Image 1 (cartoon, chains in turn yellow, blue):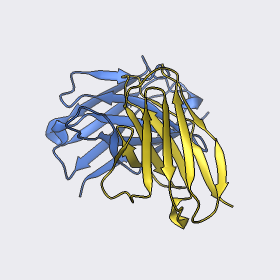
Image 2 (cartoon, helix red, strand yellow):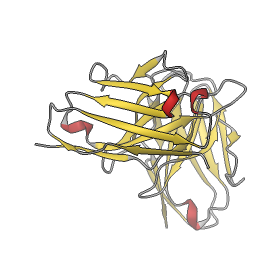
Image 3 (cartoon, chains in turn yellow, purple):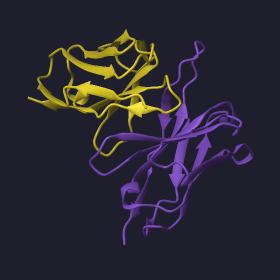
Image 4 (cartoon, chains in turn purple, cyan):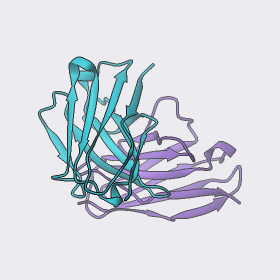
Length: 107
Length: 122
C-alpha cells in the first residue's frame, strides 16, 4: 500500500495567519491527491481534489499544490472556522489511503 | 439535495456479524462508485471498501478482506456492507461516501453521510 505521511501532526496558529500542511506519498501518486477538512463530531468535507482543484463552495483561501510524492495544502488568512483536522488521501491506487491527519489549533 | 444516510450500526460481540446499509438520494446513484470509510474513536480516517457503479468491481482494505463484503442495489439506491467475524478493532463510525465526478478521470470523495456507529465488544 502507498503510505501517506502528513506533517506536522499538529500545529497552532492565529486568526489571519498563513498555514501550510505537507503530505508525502511513499511512491508517486501523480496528481491523485485530495484534501479533506474534518471538524469535531462532523463528517469530513472535501476541500481540494486532483492536487490543486478547489471543490465547489470551498473558500479561495484554501489552495493545494504538488505532484508525484510531495504535496501541500495552504490556507491563507486563517479564519476561526478553519480550526479543524486536515487529511490528505491518495486515489492513485485502488487501495486508497489517508494521511494520519493534521490538527490545526488556535494559538 | 444530495444525501447519504447510513444505518445498521449496533453493538456486536467479537466474531459476530452485522450488515450496514446506506440510502442514497438526490443524485443518479447508479452512475457513481461508492465507498465505505471508517473512523475509530479519536483516530484518523481509514478507507474500507469501494464498489463500482455497476457493482462488478469491488476493492477492500487488507484489514477487512475476506471478512467484509460490499454490495449495492441500484434499483433501491442502496449500498451495503456485510461485516462477518468482526473484531474489536472494527469498532468505528462507518461513513458511506460518494465518488466525485471529474472529466479528467480523477477520483475523490465529494459527499459523505453522517455515519453509523459500530461497537465490537464482549
